[in-house]
Length: 157
Image (cartoon, rainbow, N blue to C red):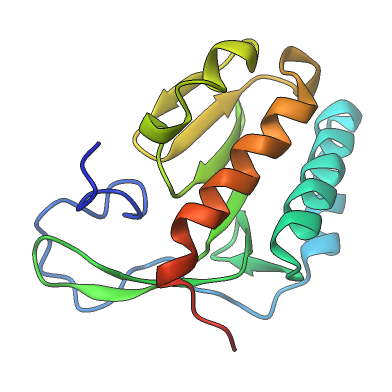
């Protein structure tokens, strides 16, 4: 991933004529959303991810759209000229995977990724089945390093 692409929300580096991203920060309750997760193991994993991301970012979790929990924000400018704000890190408990948004990408973490455990990646998305599939200490380091990498673009509100 090039430095120009790093920090692009998953899929937002495509040429799009949409004025604003569809997924925006909302005022919906994160805890109410997490309470709707039927699988107890997935719900506990999400609680642990909230703890990691909140401690790293020093930000409260916020809902982005109807199914993404985000922390902090940064300013992005896409190749098409579109720009806006997106979470600095976050996650979504998708049906098949727990998707973590590592906005710094993964190229700069080649020393950490082999030690993470069982996962898949795509652009800025880290897909894990369950938290026990990965080394949580390494995951925390990946989140921490990604947040540091995104610091120059960070927006404080």
